[in-house]
Figure 1 (spheres, rainbow, N blue to C red):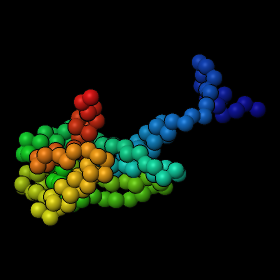
Figure 2 (figure 1 turned 90 degrees about the vertical axis):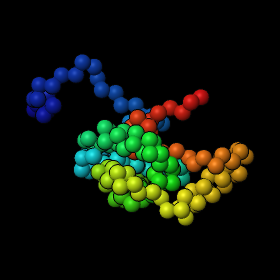
Figure 3 (figure 1 turned 60 degrees about the vertical axis):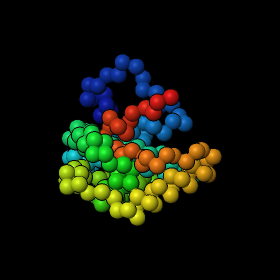
Length: 168
C-alpha cells in the first residue's frame, strides 16, 4: 500500500532531519507569526514569552500595513517630541490584552495611536512623574548615574525604531 506522501509525488532532495536545539527562536517566531495572523491590519503586537525558568523574552510583530504606519507614527512622535511617558500612556490607552499559553499578547491598533498623536495627547503629569521616578530608581539600583532632566525618548511602535541597534 502506497503512503499518502508517496502518492502525492513529493520528493525531498535530502532527508529531513529534526535536531533538538536549545534555541527557542524558531518556535517563538512561528508562534508570533500565528498570533499576528489572528489580528486585524495595522496592529502592533508586543508579545511576552514567559519561560518555565521564570524568565521572559519579548517579541515585536506587525500585521499587514503595520510596518509603514508604525514607522510613520514614530517619526511624528520623535518630531513632536513625545517621550517614554507618552509612549506608555498611548499604549495603555489602546491595548487589547490576551494570552495564548505562556504568551502574553498586547495588541495595539495603530490608527487610534496616530489619532492621539495628531490630537496632541500627552501623558498626564502624574504619569510623567511616575516614569521619572522609575528611571531614577533603576539607575540607583544598578549603580548608574541618574539621567539628566531630559526625558527618555519615545520608545517606538514601528520596526525601524524598535529594532534599531543601540550605539556601542
